[in-house]
Each structure stands twice: as structure tokens, then as C-alpha cells.
Length: 244
Image 1 (tube, rainbow, N blue to C red):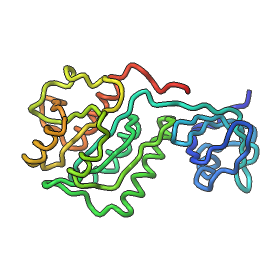
Image 2 (cartoon, rainbow, N blue to C red):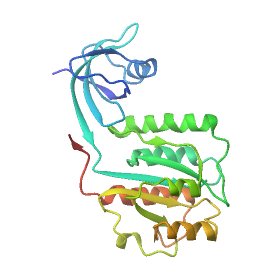
Image 3 (tube, rainbow, N blue to C red):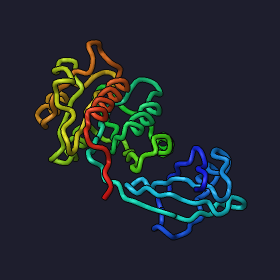
């Protein structure tokens, strides 16, 4: 059996069918040769970020990396999680994005609130998407977290799927262990900015079906609350991604 190139998990949006060959894009080729130090004949795993998992055999690693897809399967999410998050203080957004992706969040939507706005997001958004790819590699996930542009809170709430179970990080809510975060289907967590949600924003969220949940006895920073909520959601599920 061919040895594995370690670490060996690649992100290939254009992942072909089993039996086909491909030339790895420049970034993934560099990752294979410089980080993994892979050799021809070794195997690696790959995902297209949309649920496909594949095993590749590396055919060439000099002057470009060529590989053949030896097997491929599709994995469907058993549960889906969206995080809507106000701006934290300082430059903590990078860390937040990386960890949410590792926890299996499907979509991260920064929200603009009366008491907190995200900084200019041109290059920042591109960096967050690169961090989501890095988290996919690290967690060996078949699904890439979608990172959206910052959106006004009201617009973000209106755009949620109607079937989503909705939770609001709120120090006045019931303890999280009593809130039923393990529900199957789709969950959406709303976390206010570092200055907190304005009273009308909180009322709008409650009117939109968000249920308050307390994540800790003490007050948490925005990024900590977002990670705490996502971790509770991730750990409460009973079904992993399943083959289809």
C-alpha cells in the first residue's frame, strides 16, 4: 500500500471523478512539495469543499504535481450551522474565522450593528477565506466554511432560511445545557458586537424567533462567545457527516 504524504489533506475545488488525472493548482502543489515533502507514488487525501472526499496517488512532483483520483465519495452534512457575529475588538477576526471553520460552521456572516462595525473588508475578506481553507486542511473536513461580506444586521436576519433554529448569545438567557442546541437540521447563532446589541436590535432578534442562551456565568468577549456557542453546537450533535 502506498505511503501517505503527511500532512496530506488538499483543497481542490475542481476535484475530478475517480480514475481521472489532474495537475494540482500552484498553491496546492507548493503545499504538497514544500510542506508535505511528498514523493511520487505516495497518496494524499483531498476535498472539493462541497462534500467530496477523495484519495489521490501522486504521479509526478517535479515541475508540477500530477495526481490520479483513486477513489471519491460524497459526504452530506448531518447538521448545518450559521454564525452571525458582530465586530469584536481589535484584530481578533482572523482567529475567530479560523476556529469557527475548524468547528464545522457552514457559514460565517459578519453583521454590522449600531454599536460595532467591521473594519474595511477588501483584503481582510480574502484573508479570512484563505484561513477557512487552512482550517479545512487542518480539520480534514469535506466542507469549506463560506465566509460572507459584512451585512447590516436587519438584512442578515431577514436572509436566514425560515427553517433555521435560532439562538441569541445573551447573558440573561437560560443556561446553554438546557437549551437543546443538539437539534438536528439548521441552527443559527447570533452574537452581538463588543459593545453589545442595541435594545431595538435585541428586540428585533427576539421577534425574529431567536431564543436567548447563556454561555457562561461571566460576560464573554464577542469572539469568545461565538466560539463557545459554535463549540456547544458542534459537540451536541449525535450524527457525523454521512456518505451519500
